[in-house]
Image (cartoon, rainbow, N blue to C red; front, side, top):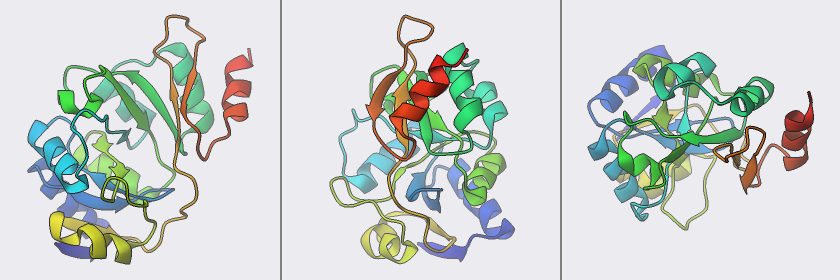
Length: 209
């Protein structure tokens, strides 16, 4: 494993590794995650193997900005656009219909995928350098605690990944809130996982005119 301080040169090197099918641990605005190209089934399978997790579990994505989300994943439904504009960049993951360009394993067979724009410049810069959203499932063995520490990432899974982009400890705390907007009603939103964005704030946003 290569461990590099997360500067511009390291981000470019990480992007090249990812586009070749590699897996990179990267910082986000909550915890460290595992970045891989979600369009490559082999890369997604590597992430699942690193985490020792079942292949049928979906993997969330991160993106550089809202424009990258719509360019890569398709137009968002109105409620998703409203939530994105209110909470991105930030720890709200919005579950939408997955486009056929993604490896099926990303959605875990559900046909849906969660995506967010993180409030961390390194994470967004890596997505920009790759030209597409990236996986961002937590950088840990499935069932073990998620980590905000690059030292802990190196100790636990360093031998399994290609690179660790070290930006120091991340803020930690709760993981992103996950909401699903794929329901039949144009205003329907469902809480999948409580997290850093209070559910009450999501509902306030949805209920505003």
